[in-house]
Length: 350
Image 1 (cartoon, rainbow, N blue to C red):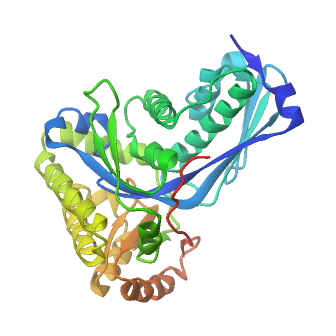
Image 2: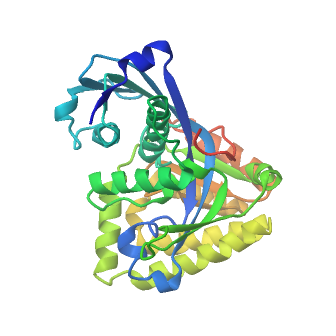
């Protein structure tokens, strides 16, 4: 059964938004890594940022769906019966198709740069699913829960990407905050266990101890992730990935205790392993930014799958303030490169 949203949206457009993220231990959230080694308790630590992606639903021609996105010169419009799931906005067409809606225009805008390795497409998907669920409630449907929203977002994206995506981006977008995620795809009840590591006061304190910079170079995560997964499945890098997992677990404990100095050292340790495992995740500029952070006494790593995108650092307040000046000088001549003005988002999708 399909339904037009045109009349519902003529009274008032529907809006939703979700935060992006930075992470440590990413890639372990991909099923190909986590499921075979579930006995080792694969995990990821991520931090939601208040750089939000916003989705607005407005009325459109019955039988059609239109998607526009800030940062892309052209939108896409298709009849509902022929929505492509492999186009530029195919992931979002798949979300609309799941709900059976048409007669809707979808406008996407984000506070974070496009393709900045901060989980942008997954964040937009969660915001879109939340907006579509609000429309569904107006038509008599049930309100969607956070676990259900995460379940739906992950499985939609995994299907469209043909198994090449993880779940941590969607998880941070749904829940916000700082969390340690335990991935357990083999259990039928839920593919994850979430452990919030800090309360709201702790999140405010941590916001003063992190710094995020965009390199000015966009990235494509699916290509990079594909190489990492292939090497893991072949057994070439498995020992290194286990070392990453052990280090990230200790990082989570240090952050839980608000021991930023120890946490910075552990982030540096993870990055050292990553340099061996995933050298293609660094470009000269991001390698320089990370080296600068480490010389000042901070830990730093690339966000997501790297290969451009963003870099984030963790350290004491004085070290972060000093690093900010250094990174600003380094990024000044770089087109689109900049420090991102952000803090930790405690609320998640809304």
